[in-house]
Image (cartoon, rainbow, N blue to C red):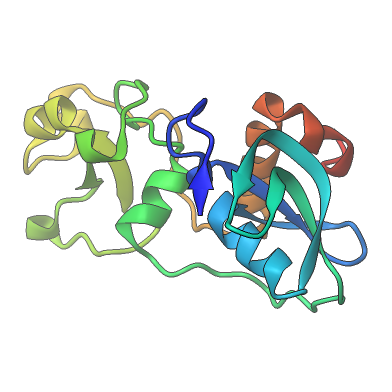
Amino acid sequence: MIADHRHPNPLRKPVLVLNASYEPIHVCAVRRALILIFKGVASTEEAGEGRVHSPSQSLAVPSVIRLLEYRRIPRQMRAISRKNILIRDQHTCQYCNEQFGAGELTLDHVIPRSRGGSNTWENLVACCLRCNNRKGDRLPHEVSMSLRRLPKPFNLHTSRSLMRQLGDQQRTWRKYLFF
């Protein structure tokens, strides 16, 4: 497929996924949304900007899709991963509060592993290289640093909160997110 080049990486733009009941359940990339539409699992509710072309058809880039059959959503608990920590922390250093690209952020153990800190949601935060070097192998208060927000596990509430924040920039999502 060839996409319009008005927006960099148009197949990576976020798409809101609704359950058959119109309940927001997920955010995926345009590429995944198109696969769900082509498989007949979902339909486009709101179109975004641009079009995606294949040899046989041209489709508006979806902004909101709805699953055609209701899916029971189990209690969500995401795996601890670099990607999920960065998403939870909104690609923002939790010490200096600046936003960065994924490649410019590291994961910091609030309680360093050398002091018994573990790889848990509550102990891992997104951190820029400068702040991570400054903190080193110490506790934040030992170097006069503090966390902007206490780290918490990624759960359904976190996911909905992130959907609302993305919805601030995606006007077509607002009526589905119950602002």
